[in-house]
Image (cartoon, rainbow, N blue to C red):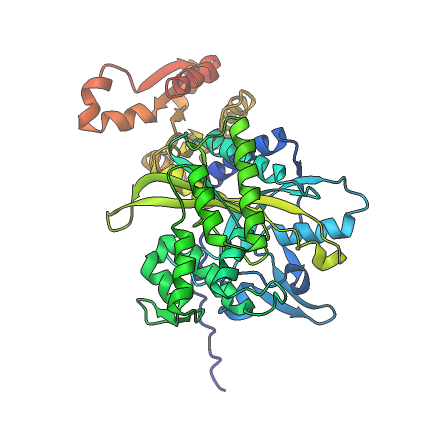
Length: 498
């Protein structure tokens, strides 16, 4: 009889481009989402939760990485309903929702949405295929006052979650201005916008990579193309040298003041009507923000911002963190962009056939959390674990469970040790691994005397560090208290470390 071949065991590994999140990471994200939602709600936006899966037709083809399989989305074909895909952002689903429920929704419709999105992109350091976004959009408002409001709200949101003024900047540009520049450069024909469409897409993606590739890299993509360090070749837009310099001049148009930048942009768009309209809109946004007190310390006009997605039709904006961090090789670098958005007046039109103005912003929550961790602004206190009630006698588990219940009813996070209690040292090791602030101990002797031992694990860890010994050595790290004082003493210890 032939021997049955055993199936190999599956590898316990995360798929490439994805990662797992544990304990305090999840808690920190939840807290950040709560803070962001408070700001969005304060501005009058309502919550919306859409399906993670959309039809490919509803999503459209607007991703920057069009050279990836399925043009950048994770898609599959259903037997009875055609192709569907995981959403790659929160904006395309919003367009579908508004078109589907427009008779029931107010106009303008102001909504915010939070959740994971998926992109079939080439993964890299800090670049994952699944990540959280936190969006706010206004649908049905043609005035650029809606764009100005979004930028003001983005500024307020960053400060609310712990990025102080001076550590970020919101940069604003306008796709209409870029279209004017492309018209001047000869890659946009106002009478036939389908001409040079592929070339314009490459130009957009090239400009959007300025921070990462530098001027030489962008210039190569504007021309014949670029080969990266791995040897992969990216096809360029095929612009001539003079055409490329027009685009490069646009990216370098920022001046010391907003007024000077606007004047330079008017020069660059020349006789382009769409370009002049874009400059006028930027000027109106700057005036509205200035009237509300949002000056150049928070929000500026910057022509280098274009955003990589293809559906933007007007103002675009991006929030960049300006402080320095150290990369994995110990080199200083700026953290970069954590949020972006813009106006997309044609997205709903795909469903309805009618132009529906819309504008919005998306915050990359995971990148923002990484920035706060890099600055040491989160990741310490938020990682604290529960109080651990140790088990000295398995027969008295009900007593230990009662202690935990009392602590929980007092609002204190707590748990009973549920592993093998035979080795008490392992219970304390478990508490250390859980980053527990306090361990509660009650053996048979303590139970007879009606007391419990309460061990301050935070202080114990500090005493173990010789550098802090003098500061902490006079404080006890373990207390014996009456059983009835358990909750009060634990609370007292926890309050020392708030």
